[in-house]
Image 1 (spheres, chains in turn yellow, orange):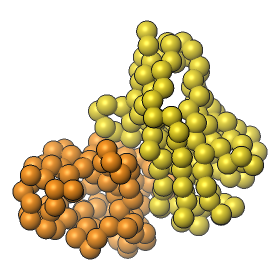
Image 2 (cartoon, chains in turn orange, purple; image 1 turned 90 degrees about the vertical axis):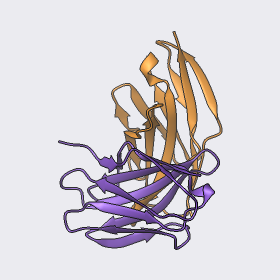
Image 3 (spheres, one colour; image 1 turned 60 degrees about the horizontal axis):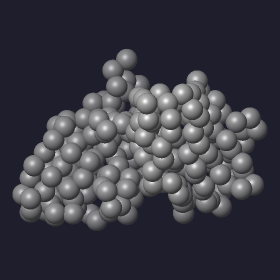
Length: 115
Length: 111
C-alpha cells in the first residue's frame, strides 16, 4: 500500500516570500505519480502540479515547483512569491501508474499567508 | 469547458435513511472517482469507475455503492446512514485516472 506523510499541520508565510511544504511518500512500486492539490475554504480541490517517478527534472507550474528527491522519497512543494490567495489546505498525493485511478492522499498542510 | 458538477451541494439526512449523490464529469473524461473527506480520517478513496465498470474500490462497507452511466455521469449511494457518514463527498474525473479534477463536493450531514 502507498502512504503519504505531511508532517506540517500548519504553516505561516509572509506575503511575497517563498514557502516549502513537506511531503514524504512510501511505495514499493517503481512507477508512480506524485501530485499536489490545493483546497481553499470553499472546499473544491484544485490540481497544482505533477511529478512522475521517472521524470529527471523537477516539475514547475508558474509559481509552483516540486522538489523531487527520489532517494529520500520526498516531493516537497515550493510556492514562490506567496499571495494572500494561496491561503488554503495543501494535499500531497500518490498513485501508481499501473492503477492510476486510485490516489492516496496525505493529511494536508494548512498554509496561511500573512499580509 | 465545464468542470465537474456535483449535486446537491448540501444534504441533511437522518440515521437509517439512504442518500444518492450525483456527479457529472468533465466532457470526455471517462474515469470518475469518489472520495470521502472528514476531519478525523482525511481524504479516503471510495471507488473509481471507468467506462461504466468499477475499476477500483476502497475499504468502505457495502453500504457505499456507486455506478456510472454510459454518458460517464456517476452516482454514489449510501444506505442505512450512520452518524459517522457525515462528511464532504468529493467526486473527481480524469482522462486516464489522474490528475484528478474535482467538483465542489456534497456536504452530507447525518443527524
